[in-house]
View 1: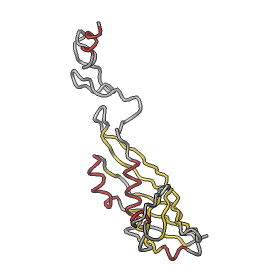
View 2 (view 1 turned 90 degrees about the vertical axis):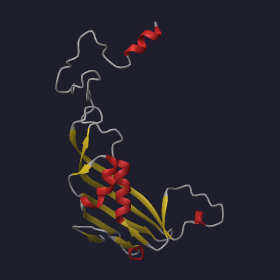
View 3 (view 1 turned 45 degrees about the horizontal axis):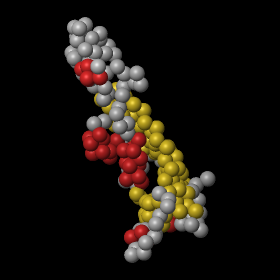
View 4 (view 1 turned 120 degrees about the horizontal axis):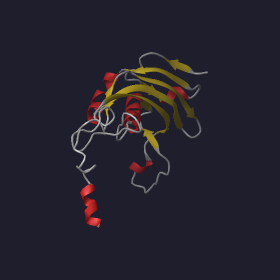
Length: 184
């Protein structure tokens, strides 16, 4: 098929001029430490390296380059409802389109781009920022340990997934319950 890259993909930069003849197969990992700054901002931690299986293919007449494949890693998050740490396997689909050359929107003309294309003015594709962006877009906005997480009791703070609530029975079930009296 095409040429392949295996093992540590590191800070790989691909010269798109070399993609004319055959597709390029990317199969390997990016060390989790490369994503430490991104994960620090999200509150999560990568527990494994980011495995990449993808193919780069160039459509010669249009100068478009397609990156298709998957990335896989395991991350640890804190549940947004019960504050319990949990592991989450992240499998992200890659489907990105690049164009060799300068972005026409940067010219003084009023060119409108209708597709989501990243332009490569120096004919070089740096893999790390692409994977980093996909990883950030794939992060859960509100991480939950499981779909039916009961969270914490607003009165006593008990984790309702593990412990019964120790609040008195006459206490309202929920902090917004007092608003019920406004409707009467």
